[in-house]
Amino acid sequence: RYREAMTRPNITVSETYTGHVEPHTAARRTLSDASIVKASVGPMDNNAYLVTCAKTGKTLLIDAANDPEILLSLIEANAPKLDLIVTTHQHRDHWQALAAVAKVTGAPTAANRLDAGALPVVPDRILADGDTINIGKLTFDVIHLRGHTPGSIALALRSADGVTHLFTGDCLFPGGVGKTWQPGDFETLLGDVTRKVFAVHDDATVVYPGHGDDTTLGAERPNLPAWRQRGW
Image (cartoon, rainbow, N blue to C red; front, side, top):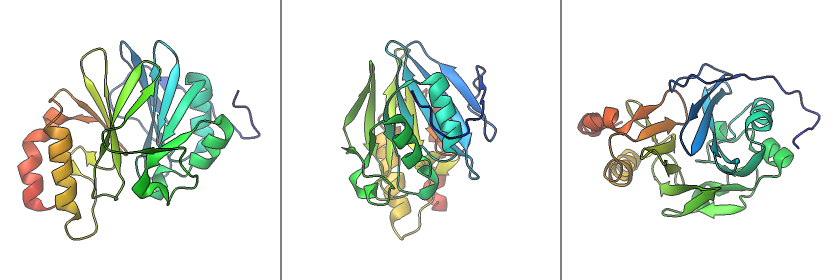
């Protein structure tokens, strides 16, 4: 379905999932109702995620960040029913493959209104806080987290296993929230993350960030006061 004049590398997806992937590699986490393929692309170790419904094969791509040939190879081999591409925020390193992947696959795209203007394609769907995204039998809750950018969003998937899987873009990482630039933005971001993420989801929640390794809310929660005190 996705054949086009583009060299496709053969990317092996490891079935051993640790939350860490080396550059230009991928690994799969298998849940009872979904699979999550995490790939590291581009020079900034950006994470792209393919989340596939086990019952229907329909897939959500979170951040077509870079290396379109790698992403298209992964999609062709692992996610032939690409339903939607969500961009978590407007920063260039998170959408450099977006136009190419959307063109080849024909999949619609989505983003928050406040960040949509910076993207290379006009989103087919605008996502707001509290929206839901249905991919096959999977449901993702949209969480608007201000501060890193005006329109940054996270996506929360509650699996049939009872664990929430939270895709945070650049808003939450192991060891802190995302980078901020303007006065007041750090307080805004930490406030939104505290109120909309830590106050809502339990310690078992797995965090899948836009760069680097996974973490859990339980591992990060004790550090919230220290983050607030240090101011970043």
